[in-house]
Image (cartoon, rainbow, N blue to C red):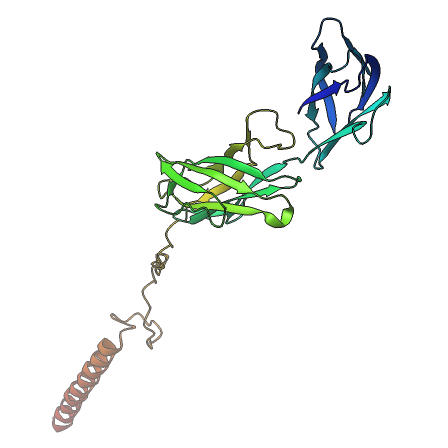
Length: 315
């Protein structure tokens, strides 16, 4: 804030006066105050004691002098700056013995958010809505604010999705993936917060674990902690997840059967006769054959014996 304290001698003779100007607590003095007079015969000086400026003048009737100085509103201030200069010595006529200047303060904050929220893991082809919320917590409206936001790498802008929502005076354009909102007016007070937004889609070519970051830039209108012409918002971060296709369900072939242990040839049990020294003993069919043959030989032998006996008896 550039202040000017003007003192004029409105009397009919020359005279002196002292003007005191204590700085309000929400500003700090910047630079060295200067004191100027209109006529060479007049005098003007200014000193600074702590946060108080003391101006001393001697002026001919009708002459004037002025002090100019700069004061910077503190970064944390959200209240109106009120500065009063008062004639503390010398004759004065009320109500011109003091003068007050009131400067409402603009305190603009812009917060970035996303849906899904920052920190979320998002599959490819997810549509993201980015929102910029503007709040003026000061006592004066922020006017003519400009916002720029670049579509984050790893996503593709949804054509026509950028909007001013209900922001008064706002217009928005998109060029080469850069979105620009112009002419935004934000009334003072948290209840008057407004928002703008746009959408983008996570690219199908992204890889798992890839980080999508997004941050916007806006005109500095008394933004706390920002000392440059433009300020940056907070960073919104999303993490990409690439879903793998569902595994095909199939019946695994049964494991190969263990090799079979060869089964020894089964021995067919059969009745045998005790070995008696006869040939082919132990073979039932042969034994039956031999038995039959033996019986035949016995019959033949007996027949021969009887014939011999009969023959002998006849002789």
